[in-house]
Every structure is written in C-alpha cells, then in structure tokens.
Length: 339
Image 1 (cartoon, rainbow, N blue to C red):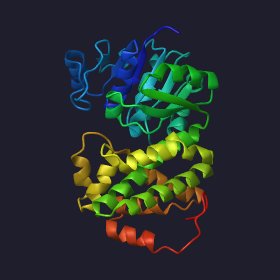
Image 2: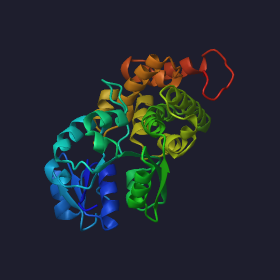
Image 3: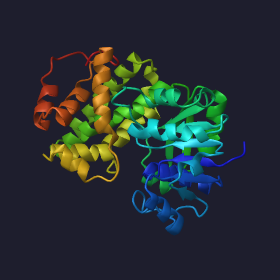
Image 4: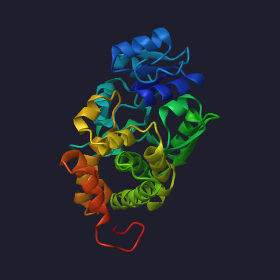
C-alpha cells in the first residue's frame, strides 16, 4: 500500500515511534499540536520540548497541519494524550483513506464517557478504518526506546493478518513486537497500571521500602485483572507485557511520570502544584477517576485504586490511605477474587 505514515502527537512517545519508523526507511509525517515543536524538529532535528536528548532521523518530517499529516496516509499512529484522542482523530477523519489502518499507542480511559480508547476509535472512525485498528502497549519508556535499548511490547488487533503486518512494520533489532488478540485486556493493562504507579510513588515518597512496593505491584495487578475480566478481558493478558510488564516498569522506573506524581504526593506537595510543574501528561491522574467509576459500575473491589482516588480528589492524606489499606478486614489471597 503506497502512502506515508502519519503520527498524531509529538510528545516523547509519538516522536520516538515516528523516529523509529523513519529510521527504518518509512515516509513519516509527525503532527505536533505546538507549531514551535514542529519547526524545531524540521530545523534542528530535535524535539526540544519533549525529547531533547535524541537526534532525529533526517527524513522525519514534522508539521502542525493535521491535513498534511493524514491526507493520503496509508496508516496513522495515534499518540495524543487520551483525553484529546477523540478530538484529534475526529479532526483527522475527513482526510483518512478508507483503506488506512490506525495504531493507537495512547494509554488511558475517557473520564466523562468511561470509554476505553478502542471504544473511542470505534465511535470516531469510519467502520472500514475502525476494523483496521490496532493497539500498541507494553513496558516502554520513550527515551529508552529512542536510545535503542532492547524493548518488548504487545500489539493487539482483531484482524490477525493486520497484526502480523504491523508487527513487521514496527519490529527492529531493539524493538520486539508480540501480537495479541485481547484488545480490551491490552488497553486496560496499559491504562490502569498508571494508577498503581501513583500508589507506588506515594509509598516511595513516604519513605517505605521494597516490601511495600512489591505488595502494591502484586495486589495492584490483582485488582487490574479483576476489573479487566469484569469488562470482558482475558485474565491471562494481565500476566504479559501489557499487564505485569508495564506495571513493573511504571511502578519502579525513574522515568515514570505517574510514579513521580506519587512521590511528590507522598512528600506532601499538593496535586495542583505537582501538575503545574510538569511538561508532559501523567495519565494516571485522570485514569484514577475513570477506574474508580468503572469499579463502582461493575461492582469490582479495587482498594488501591480507591485510595489513590481519595488522595487525588478527596483530600485524604497519604498516610491515612496506607493505614486504610493495611487495616482492611483480613482475607485469603485469591487471584481475581476479592482482596
């Protein structure tokens, strides 16, 4: 199929994926919301705002014009923050070819509709394009991928042949892509792990150690899987890259924005001050709202998520949240059952 690839979203992850494809010889046009970001990429071969450490491929083109990025594209990679995916893709729809594919590489859940991004794409895209949608997730800090550190991710699609085609498109000697069929599980793993990462950061900010972090990761994974299964995902998906892999990375890695938010909360900084000082989006803050609402809708117990929500939006102190978790009624450990 002839045509370029449009990448929508020039944050660190969008820039990294666009650069990966351009280095493979693909014709890539990267759309940036900020005109100055596009200008800097074209002029200096760097994204000075979101990925300044990386020299970008000389063939990578950037633009602030969404028409230029999408018109005639054989495929589109959607990497906008989750809360603007609906609007950005909606703006792009009039210019999309009906035989184009779309890869969603954003991680989140809409807070007003509680829609996962696969549901958003199904609502926004024309049916022929929506049928050719795939979802990329897994443990992948943008900077480390851009530095060509060995990384493994998952790409989920309903169409197995499309998944294999896109697997080959993104695969490199340092970026290994596995295919999957469980879109809902891959989506929810990538979104909900950000909420648990905030909890892990809070524990670090309070000065707790490895015992606490291990407990949060393990029990956090249990409640992610519990909600996922209630929403139609397969439990086994959460043992893979898009579940456990991404959760471990985001709860432990120093490049995790969501963990960093939690650390500052644990140290006593107000949420508004933390977010005001951040350039890039910490998706877990919005996702905590959506996850809390989804847990109530589906009657699923998610105690860690509930405490993160209480810290973020109800004024609960981090220490009170920890005490609430530890003093809950003693229970047997069951995977996928109540915690």
